[in-house]
Length: 261
Length: 264
Image (cartoon, rainbow over all chains, first blue to last red; front, side):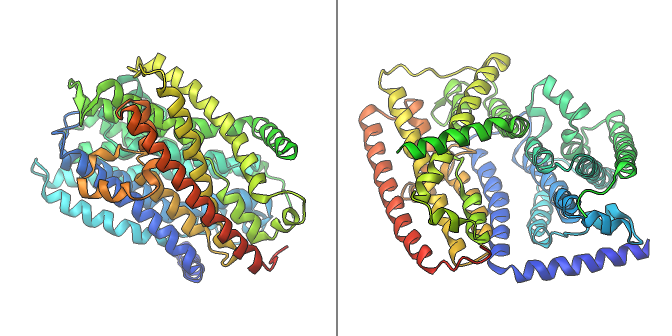
């Protein structure tokens, strides 16, 4: 475990050096990410100057959904950004090199890029979450806070499972970009409370594309509106998704016969 | 002119050949439209009006934005950055064609496919969600909207081309392009109508070309501006296009002069 942590730290330090040496580019990407976060936030605040609630949620609750979505999404980006380069790693032969190294090729691939720009983006999310937390209309008990924290981690675990499937697809097919970008675009649905969607969409977002479980369940638990059944389902789903994705990944590696080198 | 038609035709075939890619692009794009559609639907609740928009107008705003995003926001920015940075642009500079014309022809091929796909999707959404579509009553509304959409797509093309030309001076122009594209979507009203913003901010945005890309064209479609005002807006749109296109010509000439064919 400590060996893998040291590898991750080393890869992280290399990513940071690369991002610092890409000055103007990094500033542009960082500004873009901050613009996306702050403009969306500002628009939501502006909308609630004209409307009292959305799907029964007031401003603070809707912002909590939005900020939780960002927390899950950005933390996922920080740690698993390297998966976006999985196709290149396969096509250029880097995967062959990872396979002969004494560490997990999956960790090596995921850690090949640690997105430090997103470390900067997650700071305002945490600050806004803390500010918004104090203004919530319902009192938050320690049990609700703990359920929120666990469900956020659970959401990140489901995101990890999806990233592992995408990496396995890259190994199997040498195609990837569309799959990962499809995931990114579908995540847009998580920006709003799951309750704004129609019943059929809500089912789809819980059972088939579990974006609702990843982004809305934590907030609902914090607000005390998530029952025990759905909560257990969320944890069961992440365990199942992780097991399935790792099986898929191992199957992809077992069939891999080297592509380029 | 015929050579650009060939480029258009070849690009069209290229887009259509990558059907899985196109399908995933469209499915991904649908997510944003569905999210915004349901968000506005929930916001309206039982109310019939919001910020002066009727229910049909507000939900049609989202659908019209979907069409405009597919038609106007295609661009070739990332390809231009890649071609300049890798030196591949050298081969185009040696050919007897205008690189901007070449990119524009490629862009229009993308627009053709994506706009048609968007129309199909909107039709399907209206049918499946029983969405109340706002149907314009004025005879001139649709031609004016079509003209506004065309001008909007050209303004976007030249603005993106302008930022992409930074690649002549730095290999890090991807960052500014990313930042520009995100800012543009908010400032153009591609996520939310600009009416929700406080008045001073709206007034500030009106002095930029951004609202002419989405917000004003959609308002023409929704007949929220009278025909006389729509013509004035189209005139301002044309003026912005002229300004941005002229800036691009000057910037492009300077860029090509400083181009050192690195990587080529």
